[in-house]
Image 1: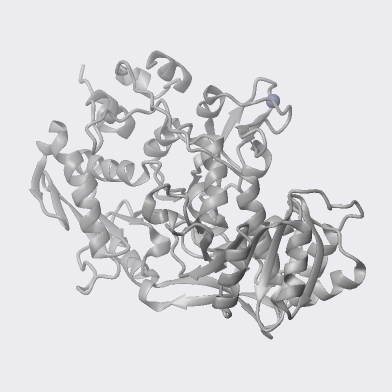
Image 2 (image 1 turned 180 degrees about the vertical axis):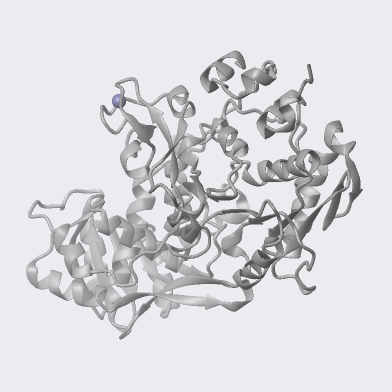
Length: 528
Ligand SMILES: [Zn+2]
């Protein structure tokens, strides 16, 4: 009887049977990456993955590309946003993986950064923003990694490269950016598979931040019974479509919520420190488009409460100009606002409430510095340029070293991300207002001048959003996010917890007959 190697037609079985290791020479395991198992087995022509950062998607896709070349002679063109992304990825990941695994190394006949030959089959790697022309050869399969940060015109061009192939396969994978762009467009025309897990109570659910994270208890909870979900319950899921049947793409959505390496605490921490846009794109694996028009009147009236918020500790935000606009609140919301011109008036308010304060550092820097000197709880705020990877806010003195201790009382913020996060909290009722109707109307007028405007960044072929005021009269709005910064800093303390990752103890041995009917649960229980 002719025996067939099951590894030849299943990527995960090939990985397990050949003890394939990752770039750190650790065995690739599926116990904690169960979600990658079925993804790698998927042989659909069109696959899209809307994903968070660092779940092993690119490494998995590289291994699949190699596997298809070796066992099915499928020629792939693998793109990344730029040539330097290709070089970086090759240096830190592919080269290390290919060299560390004999079963790959042995079939590698040519190994350049941009071109690899596996036996007699080629795999091309290419940046989309490359100065050199796109690859003119034809192929069987296109993989567009980080499509949302790629040149979409070039991506379109590559579609013509597979029209003569019998396979015509395309895979898109990316951290999403904004709605209706790149991977999100494909996702909308897919079967939208989500990772479903089951709670002890029987409730089947896929995890979302709103329903499954308890911010106070810092834990994962079942959306039905509120029980704490164990790592075991989080880990053991399965893919199930949530979209319509018959879409073009086989779609997968990956988020940190399904990956037990990320604790609830870490996920909450990311939301608090990285900004809402980053949090959506890289943690939840979702596009983020805040309404370009926020209905502030509605949002603010929705969170107006008759109950007094006048309980310490107090927090204050001050927008400095010729007139000083301020708001004061507790942990739960804002209860007093006003404006003044003289130093004495502002001092009287600070003396009365003794609030932890964030104050605009400009345009009257000397004036503000004098306040900081006199009132140690006054902190001066500076603006910093957008940068997704940096923290949304950094407080001087937090680093704990001597050099940084000189920065006590100063903070640097990424203005757009701070406003995103503050407005997000406002819209979700995470803080309240208890102001007189007259004050509330004055406050709303300042908010209503604010717009979130898309701005193209040609150099990066991408688009970002900036908050702008139509009239420049937005002082109480600014005072609100200064208050929000003070309140957040004074109320939240989160610690980073790192967890050791589990490793598989033994390899799975299966026969050809068994391969068609793998019982995942069984497989992974045996693998423990
Ligand atoms: Zn439950």
